[in-house]
Image (cartoon, rainbow over all chains, first blue to last red; front, side, top):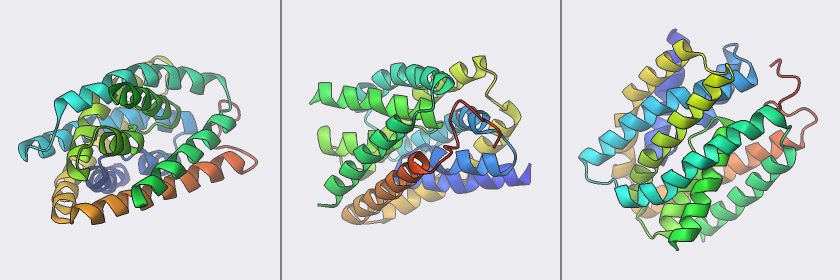
Length: 113
Length: 131
């Protein structure tokens, strides 16, 4: 239990600092404490719902949240996640993973220059 | 621009479902580069966009028996305690520093994904889920 709380604490700081869910840290750490790969990804999504709710609330109190922009990306993302979970049950998605790696590399470079 | 942002939002959702993440790694750059938000506003807004994404994702994973609700509750509660620290840190950093840090974080995640895809046995494949 303490290990789970500690995983959450670290992920929570990280999540709010970068505006992400923190799953990139939560998933591998849940595997370390004994969950299978797919259970770790499912459990991570459930945990992040609390993280994101707390983070969005904390930022909203500072007036930093733009609900209209959140809807533009968040509503399509709801359909995307349904597809992503279904894909995950079916295939070893190596090509897709590499595709995402390339996409994120381009994004990271674009943000730096 | 809105259409491009919506498409990237959808792709972020697919990423969330596949890897158990929130999708913020794509939401934040979309909000900054496509919709023109500041880094702090993008991060704050990304967290709101993550919320419905992970709620629906967790529900779908629950139907496949892939959610350990007790573990999720403890991780989630721990994260709530850490959130305020992250918000204060993000708001204390200069805009361009935060943006550069985020860019480095994005490249590290890309490297991690590439490594995961290129090594012989991917950790989160549908087969051999015995990690």
